[in-house]
Image 1 (cartoon, one colour):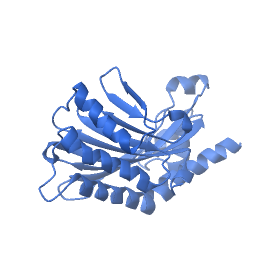
Image 2: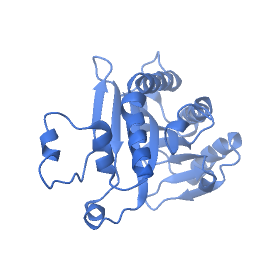
Image 3: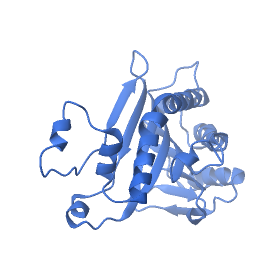
Length: 250
């Protein structure tokens, strides 16, 4: 098991390649691409088309750990939930980026953005926003808002994006997504849903002649790991994990 899986209920690594131009949609191209992916991962047997026209190939989700890949109108995506190792997930993403240029006609010039996302999900039945507030607090400039007598926090999703170069082409975002509605808070009827923490590294723009999708993805992986190991694990993920565990024990 990879070293991040113990920090949450579900851990996943997703890769998204966004293009400037529309991707091909003809039957032969789509099937040939997914057949090539399946050749490396034979257990990816579930193929279907979503209502909005996205094509999906995935493993059985009920096993708890699974791979998936999609082709959207302007995105090629790949993901693995609860991977055995980081290397295993990254090999899948590398395969997708190797196939995209010659099977989907995706040129490095056509790259709008390349994303790598590390996701951490926590299953919790209760007010997610209150958990985030207790675990992470709020900015001192607005913390008075939560202290108004009778006030109830109904939305608290901190997010911060930073640029890592002077051109702002390489960026990293740390964000929290809650899934508690005002209706649930009002009625006290909470469903067990996922509170998520995302660490996303993104490279914007076309790739130069001295670069490649592999080189960019390797750099994004380093950005995500540095952000996690230096800051996010200790200051975001662990506090949320501890707060949920404390509330479950009450």
